[in-house]
Length: 370
Image 1 (cartoon, rainbow, N blue to C red):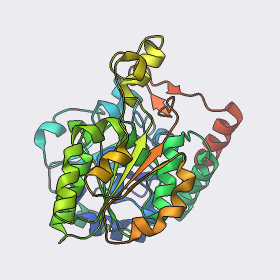
Image 2: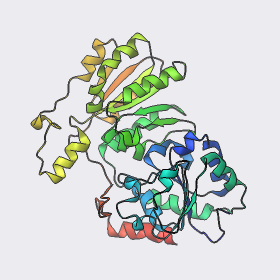
Image 3: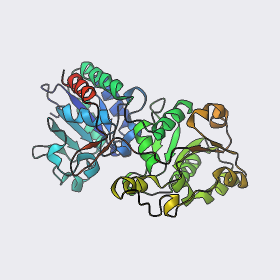
Image 4: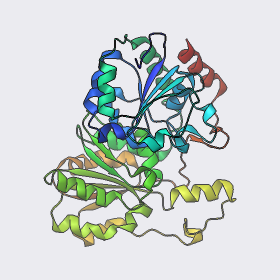
């Protein structure tokens, strides 16, 4: 038996191994039957979309997801390697009140103990989900409603312009889109705030590979693999410049790829570290330190692809037809140079930046513990 009736606050924690095993449909069936809340890793963010969406855990994870991890009493981790960015440097602080059940096909990942008393299943995620579905498990609607109530309170916090831009893009995308995401701040903003309509959409993220520049090539591959259907690319000004020449491929092959450039004129993740930890001494990450950005609109038009530059994501509504038609386009969205990633957990200490208002934090904790 995997599940015990004594648990009151269980959660499913899903990694990309769920998709690799072809177990997505079984996870959704289980979640609909039991109403157990789903959290994900960054690589698995597209596994819980639409009404399943709560958030992902870890260093740049949604604050609500990390707070739920702190208050739950059972974590069933499926196809997630639980690396240092998810569990922190001191694993005893991960899910401190919970029992941990881990399913992974990789025995070497399971060889690392996150908790001393964890229960491990060295098996395929699809077979594991079949075992779970065969067990008699009650309805956890009440616990899920508490999680969603707490999430609603926190929804107005931790919002940077990049998050707001991603939320706006999400409202304009069709149901079940294929979205390819580059590496950098845009990747974290997408993981935090890109909630797709429908449950069959895909968010391609390179995850731990950190392959900056992958966004447009990913989108080209997605377009080809689906028979030249629409695909969407969200990238940053730095990552886009690394494979900008692939605009010629998009034009030559008549690919209906929609490119959103989140343009803050800096190499965001590194410049943020230099801003906070190096007293703003930028080295090759900002204009003052040897990094600059071209006119993406002119470059795109030179390749024969229509393009526009927006001063704000609020102007995206005027280009809804571009987003939904069958022709390629590039939309360059300007963001403030000092656009940061929030929240951020330091894996050495577990401290979250920025601090949450004490009254709000206490209210969220009260709901989750109630």
